[in-house]
Structure formats: C-alpha cells, structure tokens
Image 1 (cartoon, rainbow, N blue to C red):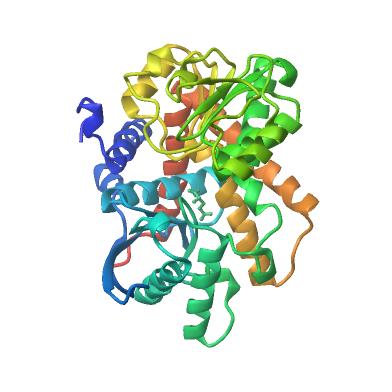
Image 2 (image 1 turned 45 degrees about the vertical axis):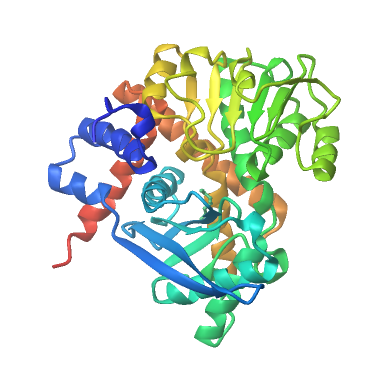
Length: 421
Ligand code: GLU
C-alpha cells in the first residue's frame, strides 16, 4: 500500500502499514523480517449463534487477530460495533504490539471485535454473545496466550462474563485471563481513569519541554467517553484550562474555561454534552479548529484528516483515541510544527494498567492506588522520553519515532528468539 493512495480509501490496517513501512525503512530492517513483523501471526474468525429474546436465533460475526507474541502473550481490547471489520481489527492488533513495546511491557499485540449494535441488544443477549464468542476462541486465549480487555462498547461486565466462561472451562477461577475486570473480581484500582491519566502525564511532559504553565494551557477534548471524560476531569483538577469539550452530538466552548466537574454531572444525567449551559454550543467539527495549546481527540478513528489538519490551531496533539489522525494529516501537522503525542504513546496508560492488573492477579497481591499511579507515571514518562529522544536522534516526527522505537524492540526480541522451523 502506498501513502499516496487517496486518504478516504485508507483502511485502519493500511494506515498502520503506511507508518510501519516508513519506520521499518528508516531502521533498515531487512525485507523478510519487515514483512513478518507487519503481518499478523493469526486471524480467527468466528460465527456466533445466539438465541435472541424474541425467540429467534441470530448469527454474529466475530474476530480475534493476534499480531505478535515476540515479547510476551498477546494483549488487546475487544470492541462491539456495527461497523467492525476484520481489517480494522488487524490494524489495531498491530498497533497494540507497537503500543506495548513503546510502554516496554512484556506483551505482544491483539485485538478482537464482534459486529453488533450493543444499543439494540438486551443485557441477556450481550451476555450470550460474549460467552459464546469466548467459548469459540477459548483455545487461543488465556493468561499466557492472549489477554483481552475492554475497548469500544465493552466494559467491566463484559470482562466478568469472559472471565467466568473461561474459568468454567478450566475448572478454576482464572482472573488473569482478561483485564479491565470489576474490582471485586481481580480488577485493579485506577483502571477506569488509567488511559486518561496516561494522556495527562504525556501532556505534562510536553509542557515541561515547552516551559509552559498548566493554568495558561488551553485544552480541547474531543470525545467524552471513558478516555475523554477522565482525561478532561484529571486535567481540569490538576490545573489545565479546558476550553472545549465535544461528544458525538454536540460541543461546548468557553474561552474562560468549562467547569468540568459540573459538565460531568450534566453528562451523567443527560448522556451528552449538548445543551450544557456552561459555555457556547458549537459544531463538533468546528471545535477541532479552535485556537488552543492542546487538542485531545479521544473518540474514534480518522477525525483529523488532510481535509481539516491545516485548520488545526493546537500546538500539541495528544491522541487519546486509537488512530484519530490519518497518515496524510500527519505530514500536514508535522509541517505546521504541531507536537504530536501519537496514540501508541499517549493512550498507552490503558494497557500499562492492564499489565499491572495481570501482574496483581498472577501474584494474588493487590497494590494501593498510590503505588499503582506512581508506577504508571514511571512507564509513561520513560515511554515519552524514549520516543522523543528517538525522534531527535533520527530526525523524524514523534509518530515515526514511536513506531521505530517499538519495531526496534520487537525485532530485537525476534532476532534473539530466531525463527522456529
Ligand atoms: N483497549 C485499550 C487499548 O486500545 C486497552 C487494551 C488492553 O488493556 O489490553 O489500548
């Protein structure tokens, strides 16, 4: 695939591969190794029969793509959405490999997805889909094989169902087979806010580099799901000035600062930021183009493209979401001097905390929140420093630097292990 291909035709996997190819070339990886590292180890497609509440039976398609086990068991989320595709899951699985390598945690990468619309399914139907999906992929998952976690439209309850189904088959409770579980079932303190906290830690590090103060750093957060709302709340509490927040249906802007504590209460009640009276209501596209120091996209893929990248007036982009920027937009942002903290670095707090949860489950010994937050900070700061130093050394932007650092680490392990024949 070539980076010149029309952007709207770029799939998630192709976007990943475009960046990968640039980074692999700069690292001078030989062609065979490069092809191997770009290709997933295994792709599982399952067809899940489910008894629906109305007495009919439906069949749902599900995927689990395991990209790499070079550095440890596969790790990655499971998403439920009507538009999930195998290609998307394939791209996100590879990104998990790079993300775990950037964070320097001992995991490979995977991703799963089921094509379904959770908003149209009852709790019982969701449970049956989840349990049967788990049963279908049972031989390929587990604490030493592949450890799923929540992602778009899945949550602690989904993980509890997977853990229980897996445990029923192994005949003992195996909490380390998934992460992002409820606290009482081997979940970890701080998990819920981990991705948002990780985003904030990387923003803090960027601020130190620029010598800026939080109080005068204006932030716009696009997306108010788990990642966006937690990032906005934590950044607001630590002194950043949040001037805009958007979700799928609306955006609120206030140049003197949005009261995030009040907004969180409002969203809990109304399920949207639309209609909040603490600022002016503006378009969800328009908010991306407002002047600010930090723009934090925390919703879905491809929100910053070649069509709007030249209108972005932020100085720092913190990618809370996976793949919010397309490869052509990367080039525009780089030319315009935007300091991009790429997804595989900025949102690595989620999987880092998954690692903590997995470690705690395996030890049967649980840490305090303070220990946990301190360790998260260590991981995020050293990942940030590693990426920025790599970029400076090789004179590439942060995105390519993050890919280069990750690929270098995975390739090193692969060379040590050799190819089994
Ligand atoms: N779904 C999250 C991500 O994309 C977390 C994955 C995990 O914890 O395994 O990074």
